[in-house]
Length: 517
Image (cartoon, rainbow, N blue to C red; front, side, top):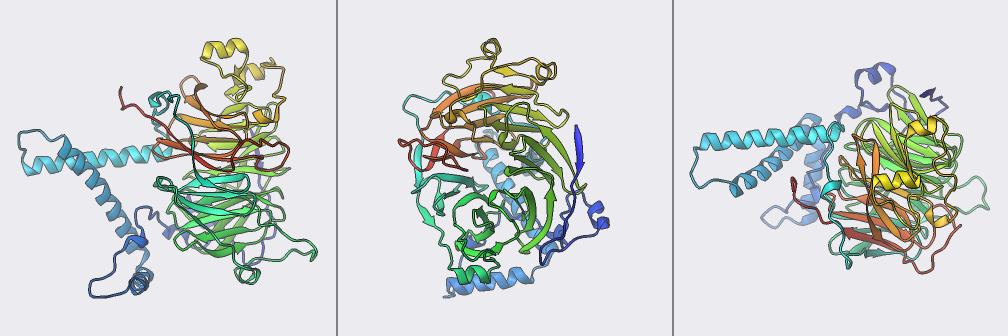
């Protein structure tokens, strides 16, 4: 496997570097100010605080809450968030214990001991799932969709949707389209709210820079968006070459980050932190701190446009570009692993866990990769052809599924590439911490897959009909529904068009059987 050192360049204005000594102390350290004080406050929502009794207005209550939070030290905030999370877990276990409580009454001490043991098991299981060492077997629980089950539109756009994202609690969703529209909508009710772009003066005040060529007008065409783990920040990027930061509570524009010399094509937040990563057509990747509104550092290596980026809780980035490579960036070590596509250019990528990845290609195939091998461990050719393989034996007979050994031995698995533009795999997604994956193209279906770890295999499950180019996909953390961003045109061009498709965001619920059934 090829290792390449990422070279450095002068930083833009306002950039700050950290010393190597501080980087070596903490493997999860991001070079900037003392960001180790940052903690995950997913379970604290300042908007839910009630006004004080006695006539205090809502605005005054918010100001007082902000003052108290500002006066709070990092250690106090860490303790408050940990206690709130622990109390939430205890409430869950308390309800479970009450439901399963036997008719005979137990002593209070024994009952409390049982609850504490259950809390410890839940916390340990969540920690193992977050680290990627344990995978929930969710694919086997997905039931076959019924005939009348279909995607229903929850948000409409005038032009093709380019990106969708979900908050960690699966209650709110975000979407963006080619006309620059950004929507914030409720998953259940579908009620949406629009983000309003500020005028040019405000954008310049927030850090945006005008193009050097006065005759060139930059479009607000949005290509990518991402939401932080705590749900406070929304980041967008597009043809104007800026990364824009929004406050999801007020839907107001906070900051514009200049620095990219090409369209911003992909964005993601590191899980559990305010680290924001952007990729661009200028072949660079840049790291930003959303909390401090600061630029951190650039990453170089791709020889063509960066198309997709993904990040989990570890400080590792996964990117694919038009140079037919996928790169795993190890930010603290300032190094990268290079994986080369066997045939066509890779279009999209997702982490399955810290050691495995899933990609989609413009020849219609999807690939399963491992950090231990430089070539895919499994390839599904023609993944979005007219008919999907029914089982593993049929797939191998038809030459549609292969593994890395066959490729290394020089055997062609399928000599024909997908000639139709509609079979181009434009998006893949994975339900975090599970073996359930999905892929989208323009052939009228979203396909569900099971990633079988023991066999290093990708097995087709079901098709979910959906007309249009599926430009973005995301699973709910619970795995009970999938969200698709659909358009009449592809995300990064206009080389195809499906007039019958509807531009918008569609949701499809997934029926899951009980565990152990």
